[in-house]
Length: 241
Image 1 (cartoon, rainbow, N blue to C red):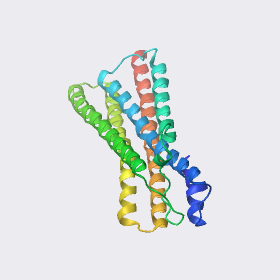
Image 2 (image 1 turned 120 degrees about the horizontal axis):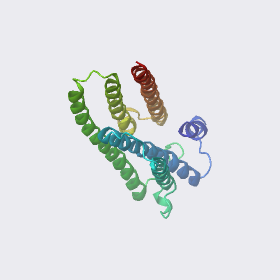
Image 3 (image 1 turned 90 degrees about the vertical axis):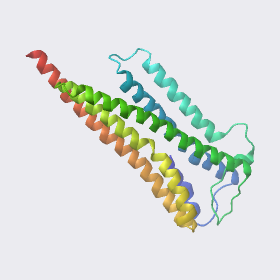
């Protein structure tokens, strides 16, 4: 979706040096792109972090029957929150922030600037919350490693490696969006004085965010599945013997 906005709206506006559509279209696309979609990632990551926290801290042996219902309900709430940030129902027109295109004009109001500050504060707060939980997981992980040091069980070693990967993956992904937000602000305010430079920089940083996040998930999940397979082989061989 973000790539589509870059290719179909932001890119043509800068390439042809003219506005496309009305101010209403400009503000609505920016609200979806810069607020709703941007908030979706950190909120989803918070759910993943909480889930990992519960799994690592309490180590359930069986998955509850209502687990799927909780997951669906939580994801639905996150999507509803993203839709709310994308539409801002009940807010005045001046609260919708437009794209900053100096060559076609833009407007800044006290209301839309407050919303920008709120979004930035929420993103940083989510990053702090997620990493605070990661610190607790790190302590739990260190204690578990010390307790399991005397065990030679292959299953115990596999579980310890999986827990370590969970922790590292969470630390990497939790700060992706916060780093993107900070990088975009710094690049626009201090590095890129021209509009073309700022657009290209934010496009590159946003693209690397999604690419890096997907790459991290692929690498860690791929290794985790491989370990699960080897763990199953070890257990079955012990039973057969």
